[in-house]
Length: 89
Image (cartoon, rainbow, N blue to C red; front, side, top):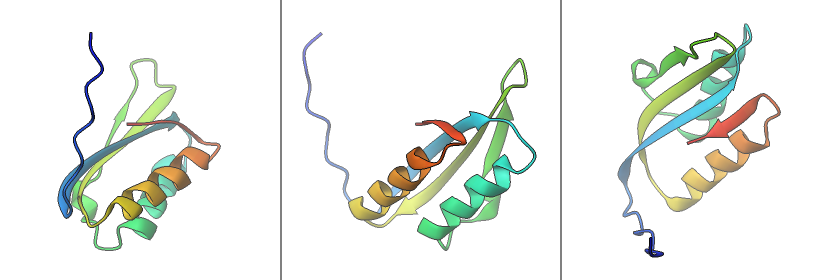
């Protein structure tokens, strides 16, 4: 497999994100609050959740129009720094 450069995103663009963490009562609300801090016009109906087969993890997914690289970087930075978040895809 050869190393291929990652294509640069052109903003604004549709951007999918999935945030996975250990399921607890407030996990979805926590992730939604972080998303809304960085994407204030996020449509709540664009957010979906899925529990893992064993029920230990919960993923919160959303699609939004990213306005800039800085917006995406700041969102990823806050999500990955939170102790309840295990993976951000």
